[in-house]
Image (cartoon, rainbow over all chains, first blue to last red; front, side, top):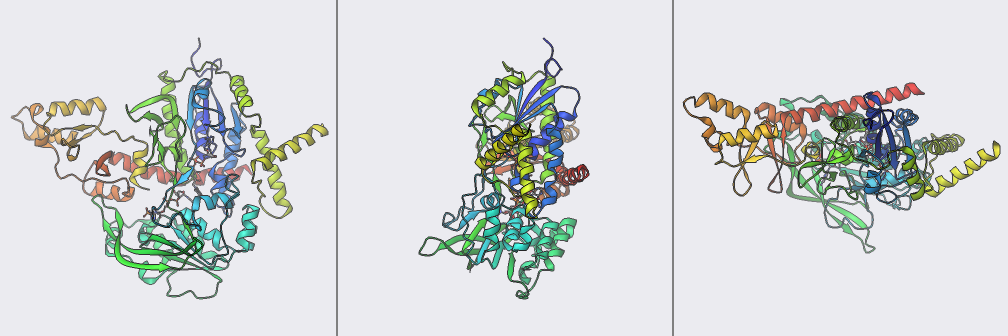
Length: 476
Length: 147
Ligand SMILES: Cc1cc2nc3c(=O)[nH]c(=O)nc-3n(C[C@H](O)[C@H](O)[C@H](O)COP(=O)(O)OP(=O)(O)OC[C@H]3O[C@@H](n4cnc5c(N)ncnc54)[C@H](O)[C@@H]3O)c2cc1C
Ligand SMILES: NC(=O)c1ccc[n+]([C@@H]2O[C@H](COP(=O)([O-])OP(=O)(O)OC[C@H]3O[C@@H](n4cnc5c(N)ncnc54)[C@H](OP(=O)(O)O)[C@@H]3O)[C@@H](O)[C@H]2O)c1
């Protein structure tokens, strides 16, 4: 029998998840020319690209263009897309092992971290992740309700997701209309009563997780201004010392931008205000009679240095109350376990070494199983971070092919896998189908001067596909 | 980015040695696992020191008249141990390790040994972070050209 990875016996790879990590995995697999590889990508939604479609802010259209590179990969004859097919629901690990030599999990994160404070489950206390998925029209989140009749909102955390959430809350109808934000979210946000947003950092400005372009953009909003308290912009002694010893350019740039926002009071020239706060942690959310959030108690923090040199927050005995009626916690996304795979609960990742899934008991790799992206290293990094990450995984995969450490599928011919998919999910969406959905969304957008108007339910997408295919059949 | 990100793709298995074991045994472990240092733990599993290739080479030079293979780990290990946590910032750890010339940092979580990061891991994490920014830009530029 010929060896695996030849034209007679191609290496069959299943990639689960179609976000950046999934596509960079495909890119690296196609870039090598030692082995002939055929890839099938499985995605639980009918639409590809993961957080590029359902995470990246709708007012950041330009960055979404990265999908063109992914599309080019998807056009290759060695690639197939099975959208609307969910691992764990339509196909199991046992199924996949029957058809593929290697299986890569690039499923991203399905959950988020909790603060663990009293009142976190009150009405009006939300996760930023759900809000983001809602305004981006993710089919699983369209039913959620956010009471934007409230005037004051807190966003906990000062990462780039927190910045996205604050910015979307503060933009005007005119600003949002130019984006592909979900229709219902546009209406809700354009009519919102939100006047004040409090963004809460538990450490100081020098330790904030957001990046300079993102924090600068907050200062350029049409009808909102940023206010930072003078005493909170001032660096503490420890931060000063660290910065003197290691004058990190990016940190200096952030501090410079933050200084431009320092004032005692809003100037009052804009309708909305973003209060960017530092060295505070929420300790409890209070409720009104209706059981909704009505006030958030904060504790003032101070910084101390750990043995390893990190400046961490610790609470003082000083408290304050901010009069917010809505809270979004934005303290990080977190992976959820996948059926059949060893999962590190606390860190929210699949147990792995350099992308090889391992058995935590024995510390040894599980043959043929790999992971990439956020489910591998945790919810950190920009789109491009998934490229070196996926390269590390693919390097391990190729080493294992070389060493003959692959699964032994009974039916590795592509037709067999397709038969399985058709049987389990007759409504699967191919890449050509997705291109039809894509075209229709863009057409709907053109009609109203927007980049696209998204379909926000799976049924709606499938229905549009059926209509379009029927039309094409009549036409021909 | 914090240390958790590094540990996530390393597994949490840490090769350890007991203080009363011999240098011969320590060397065997280093070679067998192809690593540069061992965390020295007491009966309760608590780290009490660290022993690296360098510690052993230095000891070999210092105790010329003794058979260092039969010496005990605790005689030559580094005792003033610095540890980190998964919450430590990667860039702070990088500064600390370079300044204090530490090559391996045991990581503690909930009072237990949860992993170990090397200076190589830390520098790679920083490089990947930077590379990520570059790759994002590059993918975007390539995409714009597709238009
Ligand atoms: C709100 C937000 C905004 C961001 N904005 C930016 C930005 O502006 N610029 C930037 O560079 N980076 C940004 N990022 C970071 C970037 O989105 C991530 O680095 C990247 O998306 C992670 O890629 P991934 O492939 O690991 O996961 P994801 O993008 O989450 O992709 C995972 C895919 O797997 C699918 N999946 C999950 N479970 C299953 C299953 N059981 N079966 C089949 N498929 C499944 C999911 O539906 C999804 O499509 C942002 C992140 C967030 C959260
Ligand atoms: N425009 C963009 O490029 C863009 C947009 C969105 C997201 N992204 C990327 O996507 C990744 C994820 O973003 P993210 O914002 O979710 O995560 P992040 O960058 O890790 O930020 C998380 C924030 O939550 C804080 N936090 C964590 N636990 C907390 C607690 N218990 N109490 C209070 N605050 C707490 C963190 O503070 P500490 O630092 O003190 O832990 C930090 O400020 C990042 O790499 C980000 O750069 C990029």
